[in-house]
Image (cartoon, rainbow, N blue to C red; front, side, top):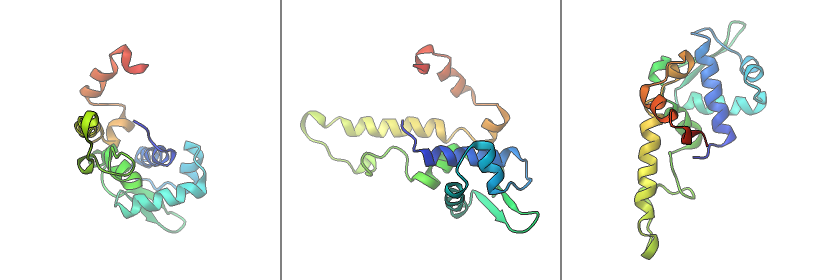
Length: 149
């Protein structure tokens, strides 16, 4: 799996906002704590706002807060908000791909890969990560030393 830098920044920003437990975080605070360029972060936060994952409040007491509880926001939702659908091949969804001959089985592999990504990313919430309480299926996968290489 390959995540764009923008997607990594979006995940880190949402986690930083969630860790504030309802207290608004400014763009500059998020950028500083997560080492994200502030101007770039502004565009990412706008995408997250359009996806109804975060809210912005203006004024002296303003900043960014989550639009819903951290346990209601999956990592997959954040990724989809800034990067689109999971597991695309050259911008095409796996179910729309057509291979022939010796490559015919690739479509099923890509669909399975997307299913595996969904199984993990839809099951892990922002709250899981912030609280350090990842689901058992994540721990099971990471116990295998081969997973780390």
